[in-house]
Length: 337
Ligand code: NAD
Ligand code: WQD
Image (cartoon, rainbow, N blue to C red; front, side, top):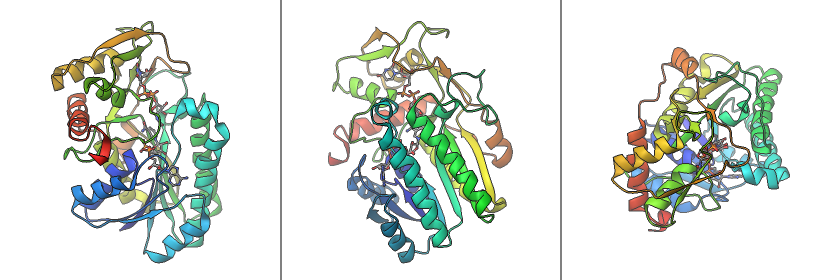
């Protein structure tokens, strides 16, 4: 297949491209490089040993998308391109609705105009909010608590509506939990170009001596060690879920929603401990207050995707830490190193 991958230079997009290329698919990367660099595509070429078509384009630019659809025999789209910082979304919500929602509308319109009927969309566990018993399953009513999460929920609804209007459209929204880790080569990883808030990149920065201490946000949660619990899932498992999804797009038309997580929760202190033991590097940390907007625990019920497609995460927290750290050591200043 020839797959358009929007946001293909970003963290999850680049790893998904690597997996698709390793399994014989062709990819066409479309990225405006607002949170990545063209060097990520070079790294993708290096680890895959394949050529990769790449375009600098904004998904809101219908004319640019039209030219790309016209230039390649694209049959499937995987849509990663988005803004993804929860705190930033509270500061500049209109930017989030513009890029995430208007960007998705523009892409689906362009797909439809060019006869492309298959799309996999990056959704997020953040759409569940914090009002549910765990583990979280796809039938739990959404309760997004910030503009980023609301923009993702609107995109899911947009896709469902588009599937009603175009009855041959097939859309799958994958709700990722907390992707971490890196490609096993150590040459593809997470390289945000803007400000980053996520735990694993910060943990690696402290382990590498680029920051003094990791702040542990919240030690009074109702969890066994008091720190917050998340369902960390290896980015290569997430990548594989996309390949499995595209194999199932033709099962039926319409919209489907699936969790992508392990089903196992790990606390912040638990992740620090696993990283320290696995990588043999100390991670100095300081206990701090809760981060505004955080919830105590988010763990997936991953049984639907397992039952429907046989996909299960196969990599454990040890491997997540090993692979994240291998990339951080080999590329301490990102792809420029
Ligand atoms: P990322 O920022 O590394 O990748 C997103 C890519 O999209 C970047 O390369 C960026 O330059 C590009 N982009 C942004 N706006 C664009 C636009 N208007 N036009 C074209 N390209 C644009 O993020 P990621 O972690 O790889 O996340 C990928 C997707 O998965 C996003 O949709 C995100 O919301 C979703 N998601 C991420 C996580 C996570 O924890 N990383 C969890 C759940 C869902
Ligand atoms: C994990 C835990 C922090 C940094 C967000 C989005 C979610 C998804 C993944 C996109 C929390 C704690 C963090 C630090 C810490 N993204 N932490 N010290 O907030 O669960 O999820 O990213 O869709 O939608 O909401 O991920 O990695 O930022 O935080 O103690 O320096 O680590 O407070 O408890 P989060 P995270």
